[in-house]
Length: 419
Ligand SMILES: *Cc1c(COP(=O)(O)O)cnc(C)c1O
Image (tube, rainbow, N blue to C red; front, side):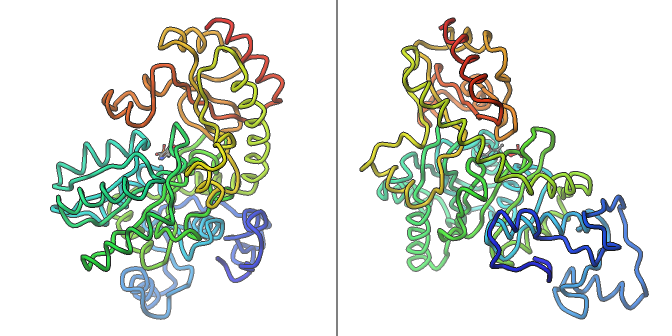
């Protein structure tokens, strides 16, 4: 947060204001783009002080705006990080050139051979690949749970992981992509605390907040240590860039920034500037998309050719998922799955008939996107992993956009005739 920001401002205000102070940039009301790879030092003394601040976190340049080389950090990156931290209600944030670069940095920062990780399922395909494909090659074991509202199910995964090695990370995706399955974040934090007192090693709890985004769910307030977000989705919001971020206490975020310098996965100045701009309107886009999503979800729920729908607004009162949802989510979001009656042939016929809805992976854009998870986003998973995550051959994932809802309904209705 820059000196000009008031932490009491509400998220909608912080989304427009936080992170940029015109006084530092020729009083330009909007931020310039600093298209430079390197930064000139004012003096030899200052160069030394800036390096001391960067590498040791001490000396007169701490908190200053000195920069070295853009892979280590640059002004537009500082702005996005300050804005993301403000939106997440966190001390600090680190921003990367994709959501997966963010997940990878978290894994590489905290996991060493002999360690283990627990994650929730379903989980994003890339995160699944990271923990079941890449990290085992570095000697990191994993265990999974599928019912994130059931303490016994999470504890069983934790015991399995502890039996394989020191448990360092618990990675939770909630709501989960693509089924919107809910994990009780506060419960997972309590379980992590219990592991800490028992073993002396407190696993870090990471929440992937991509599906709802910073305005609709605040994992840091729920006790999570790190809040990870694919900024490619709702925050970017126009399906025209890739970015990711993670927020939390400075002590946890600072090592991720240092690691980013080694990995070379910083967000470049132009994309950082675009992201800062997108964040200003994220609440407007998300609110309209959610209004549309409710109407589309009601239409699908009542349609005779639909077999089921996972829209969060329909969680039955009294169920564990609904209780957790009411406690931890501010709204139902605009991404959910539904199943057509039948299987892959019916789903394919429906997709090929759509005219307005775009058949593409990704979510959280201004346009409505639809995909068939089993053969696209979750293609690389084994059939068992897909089944465990509730993904069938008839499942379709919908990310509702900000078009006029009547046009969306008309397109869905005509395409469902093909089922
Ligand atoms: C898209 C996505 C990611 C990965 O983000 P990228 O920006 O595509 O690298 C991670 N988690 C979830 C839930 C996602 O939807």
